[in-house]
Image (cartoon, rainbow over all chains, first blue to last red; front, side):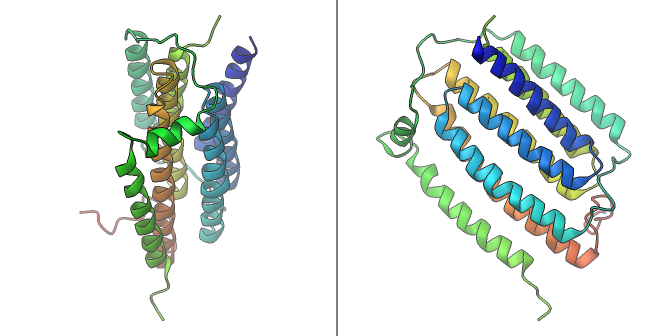
Amino acid sequence: MGQVIAFWVLAVAVISAALGVVLLKNVFRAAILLITCFLGVAGLFILLNADFLAAMQILIYIGAISILVILAIMLTRELSIGSPSNKFQIPALIIAALFCCGIIWAILNTNWQISNVAPAAVTTSGLADRLFGKDGFILPVEIIPTVLLATILGAIVLVKDKKK
Amino acid sequence: MTIGLEHYLILSAIIFSIGLYGALAKHNAIVILMSIEIMLSAVNIALVAFSRYIVPTELTGQVFALFAMAIAAAETAVGLAIIIAIYRNKETIDANKIDLMKW
């Protein structure tokens, strides 16, 4: 019962925060609501027995990405302009609504193979097994640091002042 | 009433559509990037829900979500660096006015 209430509270919170991000005129408030949205997603991860992922969600999204977004908002001084919608507002709304209806129709008409096995209570050791163990995901684990290194270098090169 | 896989998938679809609308209908490049973040979060919810309800002991979906998070962090860093570079050169981050590569 508690899980049901928690799911609905988190669902309403995440959806209203996401709506606020796309509808509010003030970019800074949109960024704050984006953090709320990420927090709600972390709560959903906890409900889904993904404790390690919830911690990573808070560390990476709330700790790093939101700081970057707020920093970029402050650096670009676009607060006065805000975030108006462009002339494609109505077509975009129709496309998003059609997409949503299509996906929900597909979800409701698929026969999912639900498993009744109880999920792992602690996922950290299981995740480490999947990532580093035999027949695991060791190649992507090796590729990700390369991607991150390239990202750091690329970001530095892009924002470096070239006039000097 | 219990919460099942469909609830999480429908929630994920709704959040993804909100992000899609924001990415298509906004002027401000930073807001477009924020909408893309919302879409990536929605996909993560779906992946973790599949992992929880279809293969509860395998954790494959959670591994995918972990990689998606790392790529999302990289994407945000590069995206914001590009936006700041554009702002330096053109004094605007209005996606409609950034038309250097428009034919």
